[in-house]
Length: 254
Image (cartoon, rainbow, N blue to C red; front, side, top):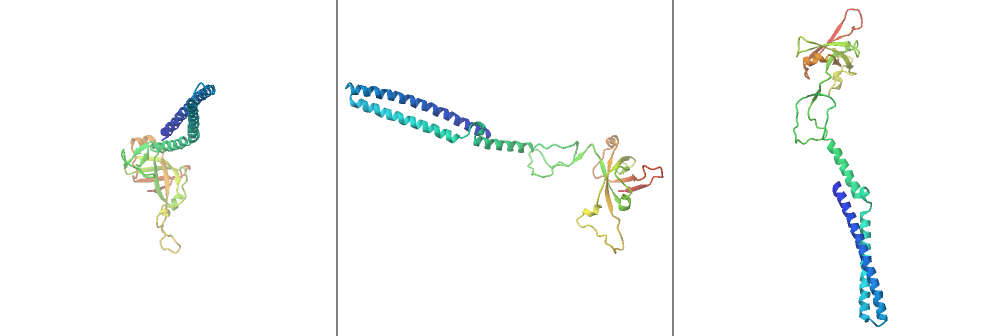
């Protein structure tokens, strides 16, 4: 559309140039008709030419004048219809805006991951039509691994970010992975469920709540030697007295 608008604008420029040339030609013909009319009129006055010759010259002069007026009107109409020239022409601006929007939309078709990782189940293929917000494929980050452990509320009170933790995976029963606490949830895991349980006063049995604790693994070489899988079961031990000389007390969560 942009190229077409530019071409149309260029075609209008060419038409204006042609109209200008027609005006010059018509004016040249008018000048000749005026000279002929004056010459014949002088000869008729001297009785050397018949009156008919003068009438014919006058008719040709009138036709030449009309041709000049028509050529000028045509050129004025073309200039008026063109409006602004080049990039300032309305149709060119409109087409340029459409081209810019199309280029932006095209850039959205290239989707880049913000980190390295491994793909899960790919649900699309080349040529598939996708909608905005549609999930295309899961991407598991390759450089950062973490485990979510759900600890009881009486255990979380003695934990803080940065505490060391040991992780045992069912995938590798004899391998210990090491990490540190990266985050502690501000609410229990059941608080965000569709129907959170009520722990009101007067209940005979108080159910201890569990809080999600995010453990970030810090041994990349060990992780590369033993690839981790999303969703694997793990047992996490947090050393709550790692910075003291007393006997270490461990809290476990799964």
